[in-house]
Amino acid sequence: MNANTWIRFFFQSLAVLILLLGQATPAPAAPRQAAVYFSDGNILTGRIALTSGRKFKLNVPEAGKLRTTDMVTGEPVQYGKVRQFTFEPVKEIRFYPEKEQMRQDWKFVEKTKYDEKTAVADYTPAKKEFWGQLYPLRYLFAEVVFSSGETLEGHLYSVPVYLETEQKTHRLLLLSKQRGKKGTKLDDLVYVTRIKMLDKGQDIAADITITFTGTAVGPDDVVQAVTRDSLTPVPTERGKRPGTFVVKSAFGEDFYIAVKKKGRYIVGWPSNQDQKLFALAQDYLQRQRDFYNDKKLLGVITSTDGKEILTLVNLRRRFAPTHFGEIGGEWDKELGRIVEPWRLSIWRWKYDPVNQDLLLSSRGTFFRVIFLPEDPTPEVAVSEDLWQMRRENDVVYIGTPKSEQHLRVEP
Image (cartoon, rainbow, N blue to C red; front, top):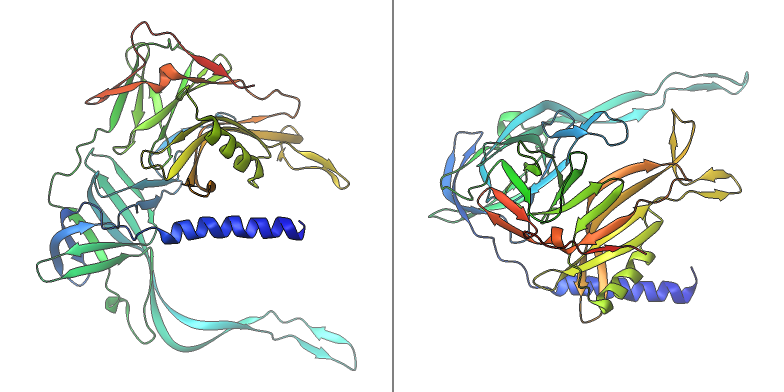
């Protein structure tokens, strides 16, 4: 990269940074009534909230209940390993010590002895040398109960919450790992054991039924959903009635829909595109350094506040021959050769309309498939019909009766 390119990259990054830092500090989100229980027996009640714009992030381990079947291997895999949510759909959060121990500072001390006269070394393994006072260390596991009755267990990313009582506002830091001061004990390390909501909150359903009123969905077609706020792929299974599917564990979020029909992929997306914004997103997409080096832009939409844009992208990792052999893809042990992963995804970008700058912030994926290098990239289309959604309680109707499908196949 030459000097001019570095300078251009520096000022572009600086402009985006100024945009982010210059935004006003978000006010606390709409609070809920809650009781907070502590390990020392204390209980506080009041109005609890996250900072506006913040979400809980729960890392669900392999033993999580949200599982599906891998499209390539056919084996059961984890769905949405990191789930994001706010206080709205939560009924209760419980914290349990996963591991507790007393630790001490230590370092490795080399014990090898070398005889300069004989040039013989005694390769004694290095040993740990401890010093100082003991200190407590605790790892916390979280169980989240949603108003839908669903439960998720995992490790909660550290996040502050604010509890407003009659006396004052408490800033409570929910940690996944606690470390106490030297000379203290585990009982001295107080933590939140339970957050119980005292109001009703958001009434959500565990299962949302999808009914297609326009596009015909056959018995062999596959439907996939990605949540709109957190861009999380969520389990989707065929419903009891023909032509219906059930979206599970969306935790109150709306979602985007994609359908696999006879080897083709169709995504619900508006057909009208802002050409200038499309060109801007295409430029940033191609310049984005990423594992997927073959990137095609299919569509662009802007958030309601105009501060973010979403791009629908067709991604493939193409391997490249080099002087050191053929590298760049993934090695398949069973096939004994290189394969190329493919994804149909949504990328979210922070958008500065004044300086026309974009900054990639998050991603979500509908489908992921592994291909051989000679296999063609799947054909993808956007559908205005699949974009039209209306919700009535726990049922989402997609499309309109007798509507015509408007498919735009990527070039």
